[in-house]
Image (cartoon, rainbow over all chains, first blue to last red):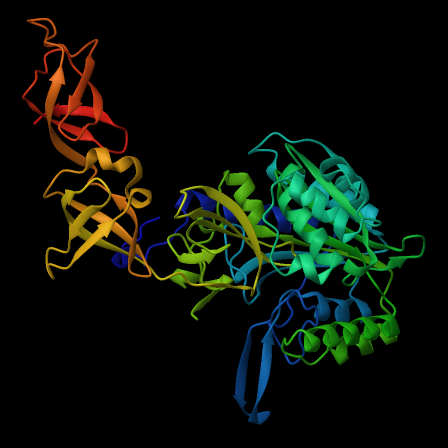
Length: 333
Length: 187
């Protein structure tokens, strides 16, 4: 990539890679068409926003007919909420390929706007959906790299195998010991804050993830309930979230849930997240009442997954950074 | 006190780390899709030259270090200090042994070096990439050898010892790469 400002009108991705993107998009559409999964489009702008404190929404403003005094709209971080409204309205299984937006995220594997493939399968649980994700990804990547048979590891097994501890029962001291053994320079605040979720994410990103999916698809499932996001929680000791993530060659590629359908439980989670955001000095955004109304009406039993399309292209093209697979990253936008 | 937020991290940023000035070598943004974002940095301690890894939670801040690189001309050494002069302002400055370190053997009067200042005091001295120095001591070597194969040690006017081709003789000036300590050519 050139650093010469006069050259920054040019795309950062090679034309060959842009052709590869187009081919992969075609094949994704063919995959879902064969399975009679309906392609849908939902708004990028939303009056409500995601409440997850780990996701920051970009916002814009519309002023004009319908909203003469102006109205804040949030750019979606994923099309999940309106897609669930379609499911509640009886759409059956659906998929969408769209741009999504996240404030504060730029790096080797992140661009503030990126392309997401998201789909929902009515009547599937997360394990059955993992089968389909594997089938799609293997099919898409087979011409470009050799991939062994997929493996499934519980979140606990992944930590036991690669970090040598049980993430559900470990204390801050246990996490700190493992971090030290791996020579991780721990964030200054973490040693005093005793925040187990952050400890888990620290070891996940620094120790576990780099080992995952070496030459094969690795699905991680059964997440701590605190990281359930929008997944159902399976009761037990400990309670576990019906959530999965897919990794290939150390890259996090997809995140899926057996979808939470309980409107009351969903409202409680939204409120808890907004409380966390407020306590942490983050903006408090309006929660999506239309999603809650749809859930109250009844979401069919379904599983859904979001897959980072740009990262899929990176894996197919053997690229090291996301800039190599998008025409114009944020600093050339 | 100036501080930098993790969003401002980039290679070359000078910050205070554990009480020492340090320079960020590499910064990587890592974040699980639904989890905590981190800045994972490789950072070089400018006092001891050691590079370590350190991770910050996104949004954390770190104190800025008042570190600047300036070009200065080397004047002379009095054994205890190495004296430099700003060629524009004629301001003079003395660097101690810690700042000069092993680079002392490449310092030749008049050469322009890069001095890293921390709070206005020399922290490190970087000689030019290549210097021309006179050979003060070397074996005569074999007559007629012009291939440069083999080689022999030569002591230079600054005290540095480098391997030179056999044809290089005492009294000649040679060009040396200060980063690798290798002979480049006759000057």
